[in-house]
Image (tube, rainbow, N blue to C red; front, top):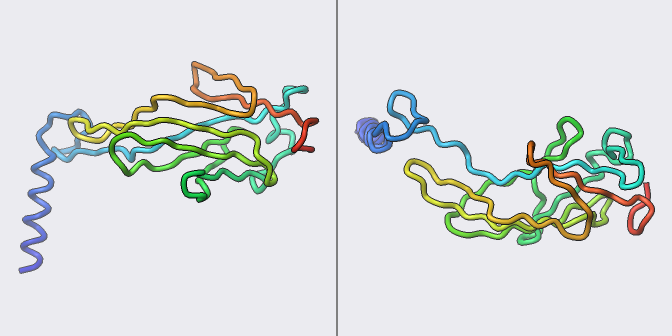
Length: 160
């Protein structure tokens, strides 16, 4: 009996999403991507223009990214000498994200972003409305959407 109810429930879910009105479907089942906010950046020595991960000045264990709303660490990974932070977005509506990016316990910069999660035809869509990078110099590469964060190794609070 429980198995029959489970099968009926599964069929109902599949049919309710399987109207073929979305392009991302396989055999009528809608495949929504996980909605997340991600931000990728390079840490570059301001005077020498060297990547601080490439030259070994900064290691992954030196980096801490904290969500300032709840003081929880934020997942990040390093690939091709670029740092990418990512956080799942599980609410709908408007949300502000505030992060502190720290090296060896010292703040390098803060990242603020306003995002909106809107109900799409098939899946929710995350739209980044504004990104602010505070307390540092930076450049954005419009072709890749990656940011270059310039770190002055001679000014407090950092020393490499």
